[in-house]
Each structure stands twice: as C-alpha cells, then as structure tokens.
Length: 128
Picture 1 (cartoon, rainbow, N blue to C red):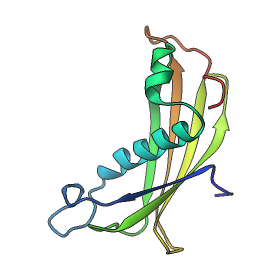
Picture 2 (cartoon, one colour):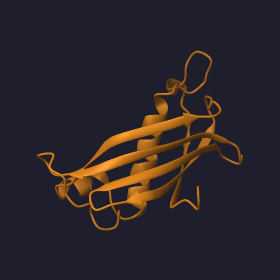
Picture 3 (cartoon, one colour):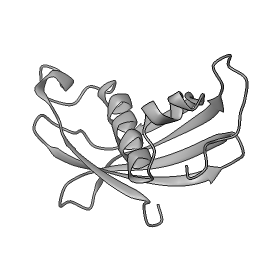
Picture 4 (cartoon, rainbow, N blue to C red):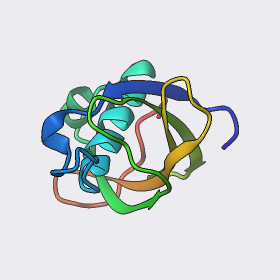
C-alpha cells in the first residue's frame, strides 16, 4: 500500500476472540467498518450526516486475507487508503498491524456503492 489516507487504532476485545484468545475472523468486518467510519469523519463526514443527506453507502464487496492472528488485548493499527473512486462507488484498501510492528496481520478491501433511500445509484458525496 502506498501512504495511507488515514490510520485508526483499536484494541482487540475479549468478546472478539475465540477460546484461544485469537481474534475471530468475523471481528475483522466490524474493525474495517470502524476504521472506514473514522476515515470518513476525518474527511468531515459521518455516516449520520451522509444518510441525513439522502445517501446510503452499501458494502457490495469485502475481501480479507488473514496473514497472522490478532490476539486478545493487541493494539492494532488499521491503515486506510482510497484505491479507486468512481462517480457512485468507492474502493478502500486496509492494512492491519499490531502497533509498533511492521509485519502485516491482514490485508483487506471493501467496495461501497452510493445509493438513495430507494436503492437507486447516486453520486458519492463530495469529499469522500
């Protein structure tokens, strides 16, 4: 990944792990959403304000490649970068690492489609 647009930190909670205290694969989807939400907020938008403007961002694709396990109480950094922005869609890339470490725990992507309340495609809000 080239230089990220945003970096988000979080700590792996016990409830996000299995009996071996390894982060459950499903936790990653919520972490990506949290990082994406905070990336938008750093750009002057919140999901609430976007939806109040009649725009809804639907995740149409998500991929995650798990390289090394995250564990209970690890502090993670999620780097977020815009890979592709089109008129009505956005593709984001993510890299997940333990804070202070170089090795990757996971790489991921999400594609979001911008739609109105009725599900019709609409232009992305300015600034995303």
